[in-house]
Length: 375
Image 1 (cartoon, rainbow, N blue to C red):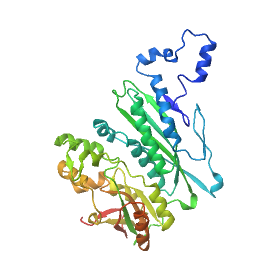
Image 2 (cartoon, rainbow, N blue to C red):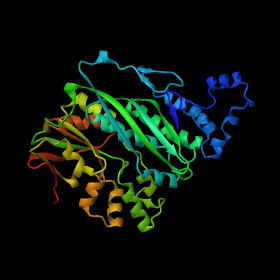
Image 3 (cartoon, rainbow, N blue to C red):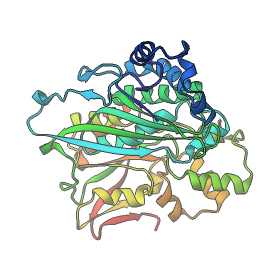
Image 4 (cartoon, helix red, strand yellow):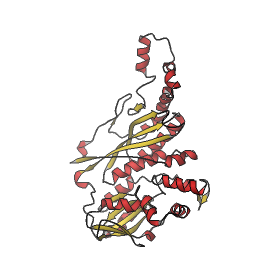
């Protein structure tokens, strides 16, 4: 395994310190790549890891914030917390992955935006508490390390970090022959943010009469892909077949929307009572997580424009509407609960960021949960 410091993925291999030690011991080699032929034969290529380090440096550097204390070869990443900016700061942490969306992306060699998915899944979870994402770390595990593949993935992570305003301060690359086959891989991410204690969005202020404002998703984002892959396999559908003006692959591999700027715009312009990131479990299971006891949400599925990929999945897979709403986001990636008089200003703030938003429901008195208007 190769742990990254702020700008470096590996603390091993052909570092200047290693070279100096080797020279002092008068070891019988001059090429550092000769150090580990047995490790390479066992399936782990240190030289490939070192090559990846050099290639990802500029991507990581493009995300830096002034609080990052840069350096090479550290065992951990250093971030100077700006305590002077806060009265009573609370740190917020989140972790997530991309799931089996990776498998579809590999099948058509469209892995470049998976890093954005990773950041979106983590940073959105942090941001819906009211927090500002500060820094991000990733974990990349593969059966055989390919520097080209690794750079494409980390470049996507860096792009997502720039969008979310957080620094990519480090991560881990693990080459795990025998656990993953060939170029198969997995990704995980970790995000830390900060919020003033008295500005945490707990949902306690949600009340009957509030409006649920739905903000558009780009598609399934990064959830439900085991079911998606099952539908594709059973129907023998081609990822390149058309669906409207796009292909099936276009819809399914559209990157997760990173809502950090949208959330900041809402918090700066209106009184936000609660925010829900609509991920696995859909509206049905995620919206109740921000509702206090005695409140329920009545949602009208006809109130927003649903991307056609969801109708295709429902019809092709013969999936009930109830299950669709419990698995997929159904076109709503973020839900904001607001006073009714704040909806117009909130919608205008989101439109300025080129995000579509619709009033999709209301908060009512009742048992905690979601009711759909068509039910």
